[in-house]
Length: 531
Image (cartoon, rainbow, N blue to C red; front, side, top):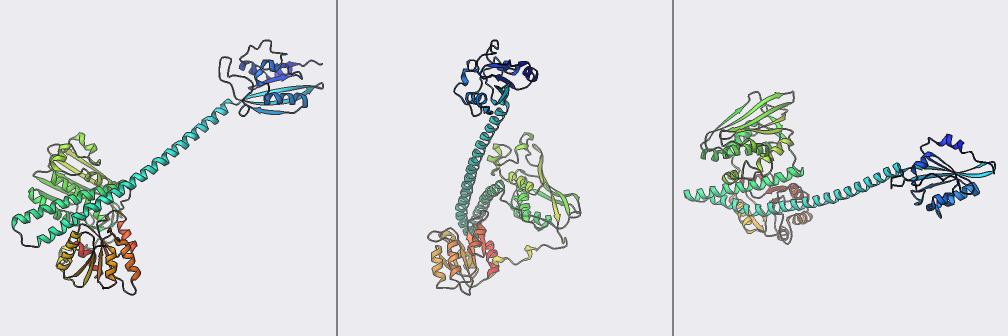
């Protein structure tokens, strides 16, 4: 048998970053390179000319064993990987390491002078396997996180739905009895009262308005948090808004004998485009706070033009007072929800602590900014800056409602069907409508209303929404189905005041929407276009 010259392999393979073993037909090791020697846990002396199965008994009865035999006996090449084959060569990262390396093994049959040999090439794929494992672990963790996020999102959606349902329910349940209080106190004011009775009624009105403000604050903040509050742009005048607000707050200003000054920059446009109602809400909050926290002295309202472009103006509004002021340490948290300067402020002055948080959210929704400068004991300057679009026609005069005839003095006639399941609400609305000249027929639920409409004709129907037996939505649909050429105006008269409730009414076939509590003026304003 010719001698195998290992020097050929030694020259070629000594510096390869891969393992090389050479076997003869008797499975004896006739060559191994430095890479293999470095990764053997055995002493490399006396390995040459030893049977590979004596050196590596672990590979007996394995696919690797079969592949070596096939290469020597039949000249068949093979690739063996311990990614799938769990019994490769017991090679390690180094002699002292307990960590076996992952291997891809190529078995190459060769012949020299008709003698068969097997060249075994061992590639360390540990790094690749570790990367794959790391990627698999990352994928597993990512999938777990995604599952957890989906679960959390579903829980948040469920919690949000519960919160919305709770707020809607509470709003409805509070507005319903408030409607009775507001309506009856308004009716009572039209009777002969002595000074004490009139004082008591005014106190009831103030208390109801305060409670309604709290409810609206909570609902507004909920809408802002959920991103459901949208701005509606109309033409408005700062002069008109501030004048209306001071009229509303006139009683409180007079009671505290405060001096209120208004300074509006002469360079401002007469009209701007923006959400007039939200600007009123912001200014009422800020001016009310100035009144609340100023025992006596002055309040100054300033509207200043900062700069202007062709179509827009940057405007700063400042409400200054010489009230109790705010400690510097309390200012950072002042615009957070349910926050006041300190707990004693809540006890002494009242409030929900939502007003400034709502102002901040509204201003940010307008892409503006809001802040305060204050000195304890000397007063505060609350300010906000916004960019507003100039109205297209600055010469347009806004309607002067003060010159209009009071709608409560108008006289009407004809029959109205009033549908409400609450006795007090029927009493209030019926009294208001009859005082205005209407003939009023009442029904306690939607089914009664449908039955009555079958036998009588009406100028208009005022429909509550949530009622037993049949609600106002189904009743409206039934009435619309029964109509032929006639179309009776149906106006929702409801305590449902959440976003989207008006759309539900219109989708059911109603023509208008009035929320409780309401006064005679609100009632007529909601129905007069249909009469």
